[in-house]
Length: 209
Image (cartoon, rainbow, N blue to C red):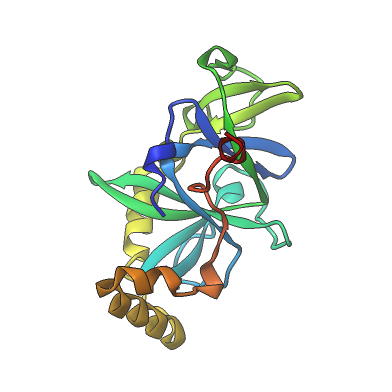
């Protein structure tokens, strides 16, 4: 899903980890999926939960809570995978980030975003782009490119070569076969990896005009 047209400098996708509100710049987010079946990759660190088949592409999935020093995410009805883009060796790579829940896309004026405090934060300051001020509190705006270290990025890159189970591999082949017909690909269903938040959807307010 391409959301380039909606990527404004002050637009953010908000989500929760434990009891904290977080956000990512919308330009870094591709789509949001249900918590789907994740294939474990042997000899990988705990934060790398495995890989998923996303329309024929092998996408690594990380547990954001573990990377940020929290307890591991447990699957609930609200759990989601945020597909984000990070830069590895100068190339854009898609990675899935497990979250406890996804809330909404919001707009924040730059005047309502302040630098992270030097003290009192559980997270490393280099992980944080800023603190967004909301009417009912604050949210932490993450820098997804800084959350993963160079060693982590190398591990994520290696996981992309993982082999999918036979069933997922067949689905990947089916997806590739359908790329020649753009209209057919739009109708194909991916029940294990379906978007739960369509960031391309038109604003309801616009339809009334």
